[in-house]
Length: 323
Image (cartoon, rainbow, N blue to C red; front, side):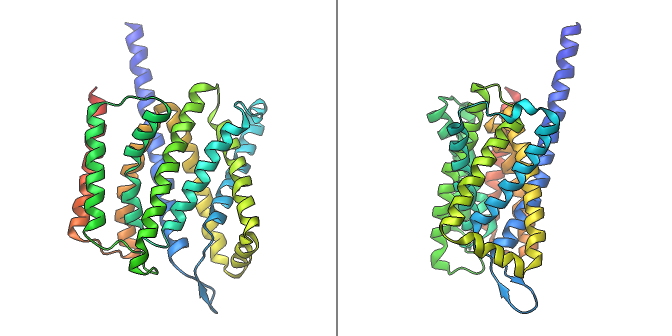
């Protein structure tokens, strides 16, 4: 009797943890997505001139630097022994490299395609996670998950072929470049979340420890790239001319760090596929908000395509919970 009672309490706790993770990911990433679109697709104005910000790697660098400082602060109070790497540094480095490439591609794509287009393509992440999970981690998935993956891919295809997908400041014929960048994003981001899961399974590693070393190596990678192509000085000069940029960058970094904590914890507790599903629900809400805030006029069939994707993901969640 007491065993089943404890089991029910554990299930309830686990449910509320999942609710907390979901709310954390949703709120932080909706703020992040609106700001990201504003920073990469709208010009900054200081009364004298208005200029577009160009250096997506600088945004990655700033977000990751902020995350390192937060992790160091938490671990200094929480557990100093976790300041040491648990896994070989090259394993953290592999996650970082995938993460820096994925995030840079995501920012850069917004110069060429609209945010709703980028978001629908991100929904293919579920399919990509399943492919990468099968190849890297040798995972097997339920047939229903493959059906939902197919429907998500079909919905994305409808969306991409039945209306405008080009960003407001980009020539229509260049939108293919944004699609290529999103392809790179999907591949590297799926590798990143799958490999994070592999690390949690393989080592006795806390969320903070993984975040600290993944972000630290990301700061080195992004910093090296910025110095190498002269964009570090260029970005700091831009920031000094447009004070609003600092405000946006600070809120972007805060929301990025909050989302990273929630994401890393969700992957550790519930796995990469639950995380991919939460992300997709969040992305649908972001599409609605982006349409309102930035006035994208999506066609009727693009809304149909979006609805197919959203419905497929709901089916996948229901099928998972009934098993």
